[in-house]
Structures are given as C-alpha cells and as structure tokens.
Image: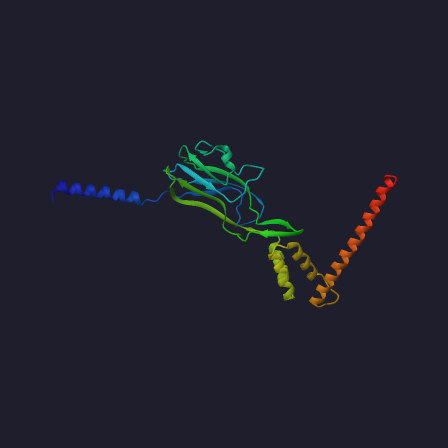
Length: 263
C-alpha cells in the first residue's frame, strides 16, 4: 500500500477511535456530600431536620439542577437556602425556595461545587379525626422510601444528564414499637386480637385503655364474657347517674336564677 494512503488510513482510524472514546466516556458522577447534619436511616414523624450538602461532579452540559425532598416546610426557616448565588439562581425567585421541588439555573460552572442547606419537618403518618364523639387516629401505611434530597442535572432541553444523587429514609411513629411489644405480651389471645383490632381501626385511646387493664395486676381472674357484662352494667349505671345528677344541677341552677331575679 502506498505510504500516503497508509497515512490517511491511520489518521482516519485515529479520528474514529477518538470519537468512540469520547462517546463512551461517562458524564462526571453527580455527588451530594453531607457537610453539616446527620441523616439517619430512620426518623420520627414530625421531627425537624437540618442538613447541608455540597453538590459536586456536575456535568459540563448542565443548564439546570433539579432538587426535591419529602421534608415539609416549617415556619422557622426556608426549606432551601443557597449561601452563595454566584453560580446558580432559583427559577421563580426566592419564594420558590420553600417548594419541595426547585430548579436552579446554572449561571457559571461551579468548579468547587454548590452548597445547599435544607430545613424541614418529617411528614406525619398519623392524623386525628373526631366522628360522633369518637377519636379516630388515621395512619399512612407507607413508612419507607421518603427522600431527604434528590438532585438531578438537566441540560438546556430538560433532559437528564448522568444519574441522580439521592438519599432516602423511613419514618417511625414514636411509641408504636413499644405498644406492639406490650400487645404481643398479652397472654389472652382473644384480648390480644381485640386490642390489635382496635389499634388498627384507629381507636388508639380505647386500645391503650384496654391494654392498661390487661396489664394491671388482678386479685382474681374472671371470664371474658363476665368482664364484658360488668362493663356494660357499669356504663348503664354511670349513664343513669349522670342523667339524675344533671337534672339536680339543672334544678339548682333554675332555683338560683329565680332567687337572683327576686321571684
């Protein structure tokens, strides 16, 4: 082969190899390192969490950084804070920094990374409703997969660059594990099932009262059916006594008012 053609072939092959290596070179890995705070694997509901992350390894093609969290805004501080806005600015202005998902426009490539501070509350899994005078506690069954932060790098078209940096946690209900352990320690299987059913239906106070009764020392053991009958009788007696005493109080109040008016 002539030397000129051989040189041209080598140059062409070199260009193809260079293009191949460029296409196969992965984007810089997006990192979010904790600089302040301690992100535990599990958090109690309603706890306030504060942490600071340094976002680095941002791809050169990045036009936006999208950051989201499952933490809930609090009145004490903004959900997101950007100590240095030299390199990024929030889309939508400063008011958007209390949104659970924000976009930061990259103005200038940050060689040293970007610092982001977050202060938010762990979501509540329980809520209380009063229906016909009965307090019912409702509970969200989802306890895992909540996000401290999820950071994504996007290009000018909004397409994802590389992989996201994310940190997750689970939520615990204070006292729930202890309560379940106490229920499991009840020796009577029927009572254990009743307490568990009350708790699962949201009647936590009733379940707690019944559990306290089962744990209280007893001088003698009575049948479950007998205990139910006694409880019903006591409720009826209490109701009748309450009505009777209410009528007496009402009569005394009427007499007082008549005397006050000089009747």
